[in-house]
Image (cartoon, rainbow, N blue to C red; front, side, top):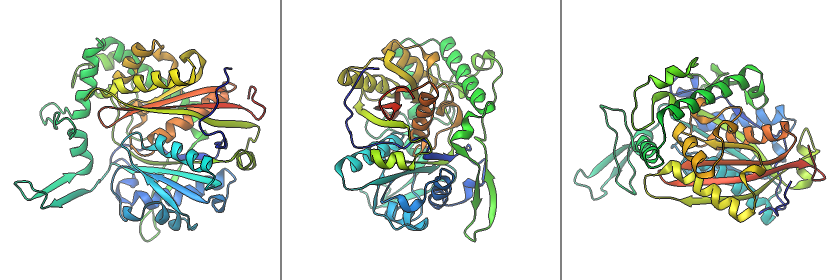
Length: 416
């Protein structure tokens, strides 16, 4: 394995000290009617206790979400107060890049020496998302009302590109995928094949118990503390049984069909970033060493979001001297199957060797925690395969790409 100096040499991720909820689709679970922030705050210490970590070990909290929630102004300190440990902290919000940014910022806090054990807590709820009222903003209507999810997904304020088309169901995000598919001459048959494989990968991992390593059934409580349900699955996923099901779907834009795009969902995920000594102390497998090697972020041409991930990865590989052949696991946040097709062309990488145990295309997209779950999936597969480099990347907000490389070794730098 090639040796690369990590960007944050003092920061480590203790293997196994992570987990989260399943991601039920929009309005398919009890999460639709509760405060997602309190649910996440209540769930974090429960998940950590299942990993053998007391919440008292934390001395800082980095939270991440994209959809407004009650008392968001108070962010991480409020969340930690909710689970009984009054911590300082900060809140990250960068559309679909939020989860990975939270991990990167946590590593920076450890590297700077200001904190010893940083918790990452990311969450979002697309169900029943709030509407915001903005008075006296100089508009002819004097008051603007924005539905936080649908209006932002349907309109890119940087470019003014397409709002929501009621007749076709097209949004600004769908237009990004179609535009990239045309530029890179993506074929609908290839997109259908990618989509079908992604569903097969997910259900194989679900059926063989892989997902149970890091996804937990979690009880949902109302404001009185009464049980209103249990989230124990990625509800709302169609189980496609043949390639023809994808090929026969109506195209919402070039190479974009219902089965070839993700769906709105709810959920949370958590993990830890700490020092080398503390990582060995907290992890159930202290012999495993995990470090964030490097990260990269780019902004591509306006409205070409699927292209941004390839540009970010190219820049990251150039900077580290690594190649796609050096990667043990490759995972991405792929809201569209088109993303994987474009990435495959840009990096000359086989899309069959990606997302081997699932991806957001299939299990859903609650923005904030999505890339944290993707990071965990990539690290788990890398450990299963004996260690090496894990590449994680994703797109965000119309034209942003973010990527990171993690290294998994034993404590002496060898095979796990």
